Amino acid sequence: MQITQLKDIGVITAALPASRDFYVAQLGFTPVFVSDWYIHLKNGPVELGLMAATAEAPAVPANGVWLSLGVESADAEYARLQAGGATLDAAPEDKPWGERCFVVRDPNGFGVNLSQSIPPSEEFMRAHATS
Image (cartoon, rainbow, N blue to C red; front, side, top):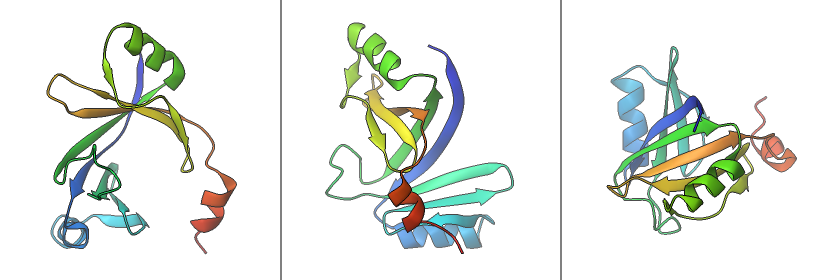
């Protein structure tokens, strides 16, 4: 498998606003994207995501971290990992924010998001356009 990039790493939390406040006030991060369930922060070249733990995402622990790695083809990697007997959460899926991705579990149950960049949906772009 050829990893093309470390796409992002983040914190999954039941305390999203408090986490945002900590990373902004204490560690100097700036919010660059904010929604009710996800906040993307940046400090120089370092980027960090904060994701709310929700009942709608039962595979995501209430507190933890995630790792997202870029790949050339999510479908090819899914097929390769499936043939190798890896534990996979679901088939690759297009996400409106511009990823085709799936999650593979490491031996500890830690989810690793493998994603291929695709264009974001027009609806997503309209909804999150900055003025």
